[in-house]
Image (cartoon, rainbow, N blue to C red):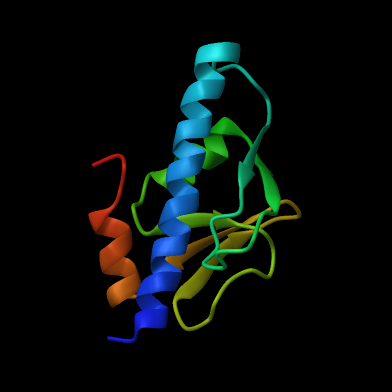
Length: 111
């Protein structure tokens, strides 16, 4: 198994965990009726700090599947990601079968 592949899969997981924490803090401070929230791009680039905007419903739809991540447009890695949907604010990708998918499932904070 290539170490770069493990590292890229892990990077997306770290961003997902930060977004989960951020959402929880925002809910505690502002409630759950916000129309739009800002999240970090959950792509595999460890240096990416691009913000993306999602509604709560959109974020929950992404989180419904442990191998799905919300990323900035054109941040997918075709070796590990399959773009499922995209709009003018963000894209939803699914980790391809293999190590990236296994890591995403094993680290799912909503198990």
